[in-house]
Image (cartoon, rainbow, N blue to C red; front, top):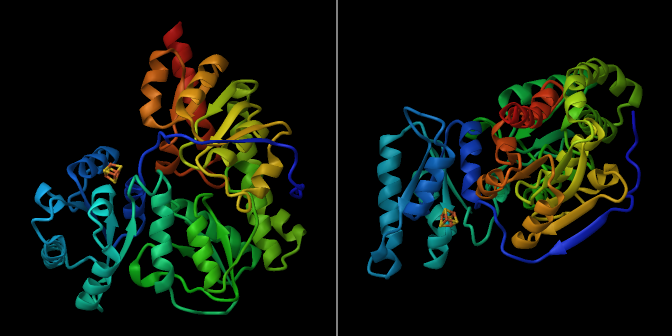
Length: 418
Ligand code: SF4
């Protein structure tokens, strides 16, 4: 098993400019799938409603679990009391949907512009509808958040509601697909970690406890605020890379094991078969991707672990690794695993970055939807970074699926070119 080496020389540049990313409302699309008795009520405009509908447009639900309470012009002009209107909307919603146990009021750009105090509204509504429904709030506004920060804000809002328990436990933080959670649970149980919890749980009343004995293992790299809130409740973060690819998964599991004093031989015995399966499944993708270049625009905050996986396990060459934020503490293990001389760019100056991308003509470009179409029109092959959040990609059994997200568009481009 590879130990994590101290950080090596990586070229980190910071850029200041307009970010070209979606807002934090996007996270509702995967959060509502995970917390099955939660409802997300965006307090926003028609633009917010359109964003959500198009982001979630591929899914059809008989009973959708998100909606937008539209702030009309008269609210913006101060001619109506938006608090009263919000109370009425929530009342109607909860009457119609008695299955809702957790209601998130999600702030947006318009609710921030009119300074609607959603924390006061959620406290007021929580008192009114307790104990059947808990009402929480967080901001998904594009003024405040980027694409994946919405999940961070949502989980951060849950932290004060978690029960206190100081007994030793492993807390895996970040939304994972059910199938991935089940695989990780089996691995940790095989290691002998007795109490393994996941935040968020799939039901409101099953949210995990937190306390001095909790070791926090992040499954996603964009949960900075949530981890800080968990630390304030006594939890201790475990430094680890993220579970993308065979190597990343083994190092992630090994870091958790070390936090519970489990010897490396036991980790090897538990991980061996899964890691071997993943490496075998990756071999075909490696021969297709070896030596190909990739350019990562800053979008999902998954860029560093992704670049590490693409380079170390698939032989690709990352020309530039953009990330909206670089939380050096949380990403220290990933930085240490990047090839020396890697070019990491924190923040974004979109015009300059587009120029560098066009000059490099990478084989594949990972970016947001807004940049993908123009770049495709210029003959570049792109991969939408949002797919990394919509697809199960963590763990041994998903390593080849993650690689396939990169082989497929290249293969399609080659076939179109014939
Ligand atoms: S929250 Fe802001 S950025 Fe997001 S859809 Fe609504 S108006 Fe647009």
